[in-house]
Length: 432
Image (cartoon, rainbow, N blue to C red; front, side, top):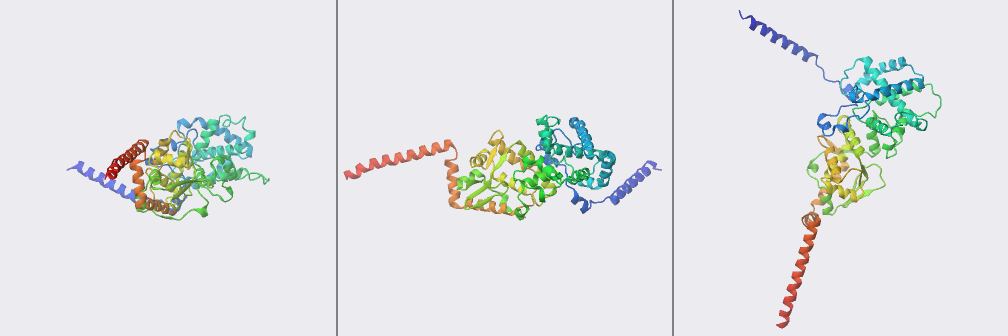
């Protein structure tokens, strides 16, 4: 009797039954829960291009980087802020934890992956991080009284790194949790002069709010979302969108467009750099200030757009157009000389590399309709025969100092040859 074969068949049957049970128990995420997600890990295909752009330098906020050894040093400071927060507001630890317990399903559902922490350690982490942020913002709002005593304000480099870390997509708490805990802490404050948590947030991030947007009608999911709001035009000025089409298969760079006769002009009246305009061969663009910080901000906003707003990628749209305009340092120089780009980076080539890498590995099912129209008009302008001929002439004979010198020398030689020929022919004609 083949006992071994019988046991083997039984094992296979058990494995199939287990597999069938696993399939039976499987469930796809419900639409309602997926819609609540707003905090994501950056996809590896994007993250690997520049890890540092998505990774906190000194402080972890939320679960994604919690417990990382290099960030442990800040945990002691966060506990000190929690103690100060509780003492200053009169809240008890029990009351905070009880309220967070009520919110726990909502908090967990804000993260786009299951958080492998039990309830108690998860809520303690949320409380420590939330209290740290609220206390930090309160101290910053009253910075004159804290500048000589707060551990962060005494080390400007550390305060700068903390501010940097607070806007990273992977380093977020839901804004509603911060706001809810702040309201709990200030429920007994009667004076109407006390700021809302949104006002505190706008004060802390004031240097990023170049458009001077007011907090009155702003609703945000977290600080990365707020950063995106700072970059967008008002909702009523957001253009319609359209499917990406073959217009984007090939577009001409800034240097090529200039050779064809396109004029680039800076618009000094607009604070939102997304608002491009094209009219009769003139492309008008607001100024873009480029620095290391610009890259970190844009990378996190783009990652957030890809996950949260795949059909409203307004920042990504702009970077896509900029990517088309910029192939190398010559294109960057065109935009710098017109005042459209200012840069604190090392050189024009570094700016070109940064812009070209920002759009790597991104998916874009649709695009800002105004940008698509501008791209089509620029392409049509360049491809007019006379403009294309002009661009070809400039590219072939006048786009480098050596070519210019060579072309001028050839023309001078041609003129001199013509003069010599005329001078030779005239006496012959007169003699006849």
